[in-house]
Length: 379
Image (cartoon, rainbow, N blue to C red):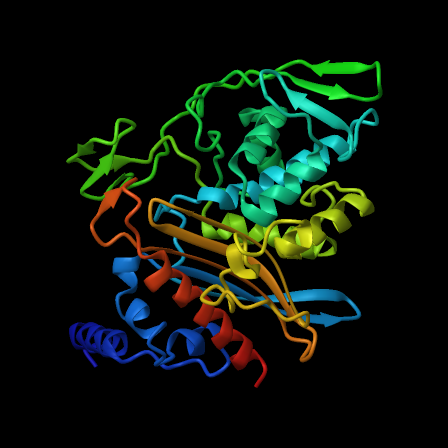
Protein backbone atom coordinates (compact mmCIF):
# COMPACT_ATOMS: atom_id res chain seq x y z
CA UNK A 1 0.00 0.00 0.00
CA UNK A 2 1.51 3.42 -0.92
CA UNK A 3 2.64 5.51 2.02
CA UNK A 4 -0.05 8.19 1.51
CA UNK A 5 -2.82 5.62 1.43
CA UNK A 6 -1.36 3.88 4.49
CA UNK A 7 -1.36 7.16 6.44
CA UNK A 8 -4.93 7.89 5.33
CA UNK A 9 -6.04 4.39 6.29
CA UNK A 10 -4.37 4.71 9.70
CA UNK A 11 -5.97 8.10 10.28
CA UNK A 12 -9.44 6.82 9.37
CA UNK A 13 -8.93 3.80 11.62
CA UNK A 14 -7.84 6.09 14.50
CA UNK A 15 -10.90 8.29 14.00
CA UNK A 16 -13.19 5.25 13.87
CA UNK A 17 -11.72 3.84 17.09
CA UNK A 18 -11.90 7.25 18.81
CA UNK A 19 -15.54 7.67 17.83
CA UNK A 20 -16.56 4.16 18.86
CA UNK A 21 -18.61 4.01 22.03
CA UNK A 22 -16.59 3.21 25.14
CA UNK A 23 -17.06 -0.30 26.44
CA UNK A 24 -18.39 -0.60 29.95
CA UNK A 25 -16.02 -2.19 32.45
CA UNK A 26 -18.04 -4.87 34.29
CA UNK A 27 -15.41 -4.93 37.06
CA UNK A 28 -15.64 -1.20 37.82
CA UNK A 29 -17.97 -0.74 40.83
CA UNK A 30 -17.86 3.05 40.56
CA UNK A 31 -18.96 2.95 36.94
CA UNK A 32 -21.86 0.68 37.84
CA UNK A 33 -22.85 2.99 40.69
CA UNK A 34 -22.94 6.16 38.63
CA UNK A 35 -24.82 4.41 35.81
CA UNK A 36 -27.71 3.82 38.19
CA UNK A 37 -31.11 4.99 37.00
CA UNK A 38 -32.00 6.05 40.54
CA UNK A 39 -33.51 9.58 40.55
CA UNK A 40 -31.00 10.70 43.19
CA UNK A 41 -28.08 9.63 40.94
CA UNK A 42 -29.04 9.96 37.29
CA UNK A 43 -29.88 13.70 37.06
CA UNK A 44 -26.58 14.62 38.71
CA UNK A 45 -24.45 12.30 36.57
CA UNK A 46 -26.31 13.34 33.40
CA UNK A 47 -25.23 16.90 34.24
CA UNK A 48 -21.88 15.99 35.80
CA UNK A 49 -20.07 18.95 34.23
CA UNK A 50 -22.67 21.35 35.58
CA UNK A 51 -22.37 19.90 39.08
CA UNK A 52 -18.58 19.59 38.75
CA UNK A 53 -18.71 16.03 40.09
CA UNK A 54 -15.43 14.43 41.18
CA UNK A 55 -15.31 10.94 42.73
CA UNK A 56 -12.48 8.63 43.76
CA UNK A 57 -13.07 5.07 44.98
CA UNK A 58 -10.57 2.60 46.41
CA UNK A 59 -11.56 -1.00 46.87
CA UNK A 60 -9.51 -2.98 49.38
CA UNK A 61 -8.06 -6.45 49.21
CA UNK A 62 -6.29 -7.94 52.20
CA UNK A 63 -3.80 -10.79 52.11
CA UNK A 64 -0.71 -11.95 53.98
CA UNK A 65 1.28 -9.15 52.35
CA UNK A 66 -0.99 -6.43 53.72
CA UNK A 67 -3.58 -4.40 51.82
CA UNK A 68 -3.90 -3.67 48.13
CA UNK A 69 -5.90 -0.73 46.77
CA UNK A 70 -7.64 -0.71 43.40
CA UNK A 71 -8.48 2.87 42.51
CA UNK A 72 -11.33 4.13 40.31
CA UNK A 73 -12.07 7.72 39.33
CA UNK A 74 -14.80 9.83 37.81
CA UNK A 75 -14.14 13.43 36.82
CA UNK A 76 -11.09 13.80 39.09
CA UNK A 77 -8.84 16.67 38.07
CA UNK A 78 -6.61 18.51 40.54
CA UNK A 79 -6.79 21.63 38.35
CA UNK A 80 -10.59 21.82 38.69
CA UNK A 81 -10.65 23.78 41.93
CA UNK A 82 -13.36 23.26 44.52
CA UNK A 83 -13.58 24.83 47.95
CA UNK A 84 -12.79 22.05 50.47
CA UNK A 85 -14.62 23.70 53.39
CA UNK A 86 -14.41 21.63 56.59
CA UNK A 87 -12.69 18.65 54.97
CA UNK A 88 -9.42 20.50 55.78
CA UNK A 89 -10.10 19.71 59.44
CA UNK A 90 -9.03 16.11 58.83
CA UNK A 91 -5.35 16.85 58.08
CA UNK A 92 -5.21 19.57 60.74
CA UNK A 93 -6.44 17.10 63.40
CA UNK A 94 -3.82 14.59 62.30
CA UNK A 95 -1.00 17.12 62.31
CA UNK A 96 -1.98 18.44 65.76
CA UNK A 97 -1.87 14.95 67.26
CA UNK A 98 1.42 14.25 65.50
CA UNK A 99 3.01 17.48 66.78
CA UNK A 100 1.82 16.72 70.33
CA UNK A 101 3.31 13.23 70.02
CA UNK A 102 6.72 14.78 69.37
CA UNK A 103 6.64 16.93 72.53
CA UNK A 104 6.86 14.90 75.76
CA UNK A 105 5.56 17.82 77.82
CA UNK A 106 2.03 17.60 76.45
CA UNK A 107 -0.57 15.18 75.16
CA UNK A 108 -4.09 15.38 73.79
CA UNK A 109 -5.54 15.64 77.33
CA UNK A 110 -3.31 18.51 78.52
CA UNK A 111 -5.35 21.62 79.24
CA UNK A 112 -4.55 24.61 77.03
CA UNK A 113 -5.97 27.88 75.86
CA UNK A 114 -5.29 30.26 73.00
CA UNK A 115 -4.17 33.77 73.90
CA UNK A 116 -7.28 35.95 73.90
CA UNK A 117 -9.67 32.98 73.83
CA UNK A 118 -12.50 32.56 76.33
CA UNK A 119 -12.20 28.85 77.07
CA UNK A 120 -9.66 26.37 78.40
CA UNK A 121 -9.87 23.02 76.68
CA UNK A 122 -7.91 19.99 75.47
CA UNK A 123 -6.97 18.79 72.01
CA UNK A 124 -9.09 15.69 72.63
CA UNK A 125 -12.15 17.87 73.22
CA UNK A 126 -11.49 20.02 70.17
CA UNK A 127 -10.91 17.06 67.85
CA UNK A 128 -14.09 15.39 69.06
CA UNK A 129 -15.99 18.61 68.27
CA UNK A 130 -14.39 18.73 64.83
CA UNK A 131 -15.67 15.27 63.87
CA UNK A 132 -18.97 15.33 65.76
CA UNK A 133 -20.29 18.75 64.72
CA UNK A 134 -17.53 20.18 62.46
CA UNK A 135 -16.81 23.00 64.91
CA UNK A 136 -14.96 25.94 63.29
CA UNK A 137 -13.48 27.48 66.49
CA UNK A 138 -12.02 24.05 67.32
CA UNK A 139 -10.30 23.96 63.93
CA UNK A 140 -9.01 27.49 64.43
CA UNK A 141 -7.44 26.58 67.79
CA UNK A 142 -5.54 23.72 66.13
CA UNK A 143 -4.55 26.04 63.28
CA UNK A 144 -3.02 28.48 65.80
CA UNK A 145 -1.03 25.64 67.37
CA UNK A 146 0.36 24.50 64.03
CA UNK A 147 0.73 27.63 61.88
CA UNK A 148 0.16 27.76 58.13
CA UNK A 149 3.73 27.09 56.99
CA UNK A 150 4.18 24.11 59.30
CA UNK A 151 0.94 22.58 58.02
CA UNK A 152 1.86 22.77 54.37
CA UNK A 153 5.50 21.84 54.77
CA UNK A 154 4.64 18.74 56.81
CA UNK A 155 2.01 17.55 54.35
CA UNK A 156 4.45 18.02 51.48
CA UNK A 157 7.10 15.99 53.34
CA UNK A 158 4.60 13.14 53.57
CA UNK A 159 4.08 13.20 49.81
CA UNK A 160 0.59 14.66 50.04
CA UNK A 161 0.43 16.98 47.06
CA UNK A 162 -1.01 19.19 45.76
CA UNK A 163 -2.38 20.92 48.85
CA UNK A 164 -2.47 24.42 50.33
CA UNK A 165 -4.08 25.17 53.70
CA UNK A 166 -4.01 28.94 53.95
CA UNK A 167 -6.55 30.21 56.47
CA UNK A 168 -8.72 29.84 59.52
CA UNK A 169 -12.49 29.42 59.12
CA UNK A 170 -15.34 31.86 59.76
CA UNK A 171 -13.31 34.50 61.56
CA UNK A 172 -12.28 38.06 60.72
CA UNK A 173 -8.56 37.28 61.08
CA UNK A 174 -8.65 34.22 58.84
CA UNK A 175 -5.47 35.18 56.96
CA UNK A 176 -3.42 36.67 59.80
CA UNK A 177 0.12 35.32 59.24
CA UNK A 178 0.92 35.57 62.96
CA UNK A 179 -0.51 32.73 65.03
CA UNK A 180 -1.79 33.40 68.51
CA UNK A 181 0.19 32.02 71.45
CA UNK A 182 -0.82 28.64 72.86
CA UNK A 183 -0.63 28.38 76.67
CA UNK A 184 -0.57 24.88 78.18
CA UNK A 185 -1.82 24.40 81.73
CA UNK A 186 0.26 21.40 82.82
CA UNK A 187 -0.76 21.39 86.48
CA UNK A 188 -2.17 23.74 89.10
CA UNK A 189 0.79 26.10 88.98
CA UNK A 190 2.71 25.50 85.73
CA UNK A 191 1.84 27.39 82.58
CA UNK A 192 3.90 26.87 79.43
CA UNK A 193 3.51 29.33 76.58
CA UNK A 194 4.59 28.31 73.10
CA UNK A 195 5.97 31.01 70.86
CA UNK A 196 3.46 31.99 68.22
CA UNK A 197 4.74 31.03 64.75
CA UNK A 198 4.71 33.53 61.91
CA UNK A 199 3.95 32.26 58.41
CA UNK A 200 4.71 33.72 55.02
CA UNK A 201 2.16 35.50 52.83
CA UNK A 202 -0.59 33.54 51.08
CA UNK A 203 0.16 33.28 47.38
CA UNK A 204 -2.52 33.01 44.71
CA UNK A 205 -3.14 29.48 43.48
CA UNK A 206 -1.77 29.08 39.94
CA UNK A 207 -4.87 27.24 38.73
CA UNK A 208 -7.28 28.07 35.91
CA UNK A 209 -10.76 29.40 36.60
CA UNK A 210 -10.28 30.65 40.14
CA UNK A 211 -13.03 33.23 39.57
CA UNK A 212 -16.31 31.44 40.26
CA UNK A 213 -19.98 32.14 39.70
CA UNK A 214 -21.96 35.22 38.73
CA UNK A 215 -21.72 37.08 42.02
CA UNK A 216 -21.27 36.87 45.78
CA UNK A 217 -22.44 38.41 49.02
CA UNK A 218 -19.73 40.46 50.72
CA UNK A 219 -19.16 40.93 54.46
CA UNK A 220 -21.80 43.68 54.49
CA UNK A 221 -24.40 41.33 52.94
CA UNK A 222 -24.29 43.33 49.72
CA UNK A 223 -24.54 41.50 46.41
CA UNK A 224 -21.43 42.00 44.28
CA UNK A 225 -22.25 41.26 40.64
CA UNK A 226 -18.90 39.77 39.67
CA UNK A 227 -17.31 36.32 40.10
CA UNK A 228 -15.93 35.38 43.51
CA UNK A 229 -12.15 34.98 43.72
CA UNK A 230 -11.06 31.72 45.40
CA UNK A 231 -7.33 32.05 44.59
CA UNK A 232 -6.18 32.59 48.19
CA UNK A 233 -8.50 30.06 49.80
CA UNK A 234 -7.77 26.56 51.08
CA UNK A 235 -7.00 23.95 48.41
CA UNK A 236 -7.37 20.23 49.13
CA UNK A 237 -8.20 18.33 45.91
CA UNK A 238 -9.72 14.86 45.75
CA UNK A 239 -6.41 13.07 45.14
CA UNK A 240 -4.80 14.64 48.21
CA UNK A 241 -7.80 14.18 50.52
CA UNK A 242 -8.09 10.56 49.43
CA UNK A 243 -4.37 10.02 50.08
CA UNK A 244 -4.76 11.39 53.61
CA UNK A 245 -7.56 9.03 54.63
CA UNK A 246 -5.67 6.07 53.16
CA UNK A 247 -2.78 6.93 55.50
CA UNK A 248 -5.17 7.21 58.45
CA UNK A 249 -6.86 3.84 57.98
CA UNK A 250 -3.98 1.85 56.51
CA UNK A 251 -0.70 3.40 57.71
CA UNK A 252 1.13 0.13 57.14
CA UNK A 253 0.60 0.54 53.38
CA UNK A 254 2.91 3.58 53.40
CA UNK A 255 6.52 4.26 54.24
CA UNK A 256 7.40 5.75 57.64
CA UNK A 257 8.03 9.13 56.01
CA UNK A 258 4.59 9.09 54.38
CA UNK A 259 2.71 8.15 57.55
CA UNK A 260 1.34 10.41 60.26
CA UNK A 261 3.46 9.76 63.34
CA UNK A 262 0.77 8.99 65.91
CA UNK A 263 1.00 6.97 69.09
CA UNK A 264 -1.20 3.87 69.24
CA UNK A 265 -3.42 5.62 71.78
CA UNK A 266 -3.78 8.76 69.65
CA UNK A 267 -4.62 6.77 66.52
CA UNK A 268 -7.27 4.77 68.38
CA UNK A 269 -8.71 8.00 69.75
CA UNK A 270 -8.77 9.57 66.27
CA UNK A 271 -10.51 6.58 64.70
CA UNK A 272 -13.08 6.64 67.49
CA UNK A 273 -13.72 10.34 66.88
CA UNK A 274 -14.00 9.86 63.12
CA UNK A 275 -16.48 6.99 63.39
CA UNK A 276 -18.63 8.14 66.32
CA UNK A 277 -22.01 9.77 65.97
CA UNK A 278 -22.65 13.12 67.67
CA UNK A 279 -24.91 11.43 70.25
CA UNK A 280 -22.09 9.04 71.16
CA UNK A 281 -19.88 12.04 71.87
CA UNK A 282 -22.44 13.76 74.09
CA UNK A 283 -24.24 16.09 71.67
CA UNK A 284 -28.03 16.41 71.66
CA UNK A 285 -29.55 14.10 69.06
CA UNK A 286 -32.41 16.47 68.28
CA UNK A 287 -29.84 18.98 67.02
CA UNK A 288 -27.16 16.61 65.74
CA UNK A 289 -28.65 13.41 64.34
CA UNK A 290 -26.40 10.45 63.42
CA UNK A 291 -25.84 11.49 59.80
CA UNK A 292 -25.24 15.16 60.60
CA UNK A 293 -21.65 14.71 59.41
CA UNK A 294 -21.96 11.43 57.48
CA UNK A 295 -23.37 11.88 53.98
CA UNK A 296 -22.61 8.55 52.30
CA UNK A 297 -25.38 5.92 52.68
CA UNK A 298 -27.28 7.78 55.46
CA UNK A 299 -27.07 11.49 54.67
CA UNK A 300 -30.66 11.76 53.44
CA UNK A 301 -32.19 10.27 56.60
CA UNK A 302 -32.23 11.26 60.25
CA UNK A 303 -32.62 7.68 61.41
CA UNK A 304 -29.92 6.13 63.60
CA UNK A 305 -27.02 4.53 61.75
CA UNK A 306 -26.91 0.77 62.52
CA UNK A 307 -24.03 -0.52 64.59
CA UNK A 308 -23.01 -2.91 61.79
CA UNK A 309 -21.94 -0.03 59.53
CA UNK A 310 -18.86 1.95 60.54
CA UNK A 311 -18.08 5.18 58.70
CA UNK A 312 -14.76 6.93 59.40
CA UNK A 313 -14.99 10.25 57.62
CA UNK A 314 -14.90 14.02 57.39
CA UNK A 315 -17.36 16.14 55.45
CA UNK A 316 -17.21 19.73 54.29
CA UNK A 317 -19.78 22.09 52.83
CA UNK A 318 -19.68 25.79 52.04
CA UNK A 319 -20.54 28.07 49.11
CA UNK A 320 -22.50 25.17 47.57
CA UNK A 321 -19.48 22.86 47.46
CA UNK A 322 -20.17 19.55 49.16
CA UNK A 323 -17.43 17.05 50.09
CA UNK A 324 -17.25 13.75 51.93
CA UNK A 325 -14.21 11.54 52.40
CA UNK A 326 -14.84 8.21 54.10
CA UNK A 327 -13.67 4.71 54.88
CA UNK A 328 -16.76 2.51 55.12
CA UNK A 329 -16.90 -0.96 56.66
CA UNK A 330 -19.91 -3.27 56.71
CA UNK A 331 -19.42 -5.79 59.52
CA UNK A 332 -22.19 -8.05 58.24
CA UNK A 333 -20.69 -8.58 54.78
CA UNK A 334 -17.04 -7.67 55.34
CA UNK A 335 -17.25 -5.10 52.54
CA UNK A 336 -14.86 -2.18 52.98
CA UNK A 337 -13.91 0.71 50.71
CA UNK A 338 -12.69 4.30 50.67
CA UNK A 339 -14.74 6.91 48.83
CA UNK A 340 -14.09 10.63 48.34
CA UNK A 341 -16.49 12.83 46.40
CA UNK A 342 -17.26 16.45 45.73
CA UNK A 343 -19.94 18.33 43.82
CA UNK A 344 -21.24 21.88 43.51
CA UNK A 345 -24.93 22.61 44.14
CA UNK A 346 -25.32 26.35 43.60
CA UNK A 347 -27.99 26.86 40.96
CA UNK A 348 -28.17 30.65 41.10
CA UNK A 349 -24.39 31.05 40.76
CA UNK A 350 -24.24 33.39 43.76
CA UNK A 351 -21.70 32.50 46.45
CA UNK A 352 -22.11 33.19 50.15
CA UNK A 353 -25.87 33.79 49.95
CA UNK A 354 -26.79 30.57 51.78
CA UNK A 355 -29.04 29.41 48.93
CA UNK A 356 -27.74 25.98 47.94
CA UNK A 357 -29.24 22.61 47.05
CA UNK A 358 -27.53 20.55 49.74
CA UNK A 359 -30.67 18.80 51.00
CA UNK A 360 -32.52 18.50 47.69
CA UNK A 361 -29.67 17.43 45.38
CA UNK A 362 -26.19 17.13 46.89
CA UNK A 363 -26.61 15.06 50.05
CA UNK A 364 -29.21 12.71 48.48
CA UNK A 365 -26.74 12.07 45.64
CA UNK A 366 -23.91 11.21 48.04
CA UNK A 367 -26.19 9.03 50.17
CA UNK A 368 -27.43 7.03 47.19
CA UNK A 369 -23.91 6.80 45.77
CA UNK A 370 -22.83 5.14 49.01
CA UNK A 371 -25.76 2.72 48.87
CA UNK A 372 -25.06 1.82 45.25
CA UNK A 373 -21.42 1.08 46.03
CA UNK A 374 -22.33 -1.02 49.06
CA UNK A 375 -24.75 -3.01 46.90
CA UNK A 376 -22.40 -3.44 43.94
CA UNK A 377 -19.39 -4.44 46.03
CA UNK A 378 -21.50 -7.08 47.75
CA UNK A 379 -22.19 -8.86 44.44
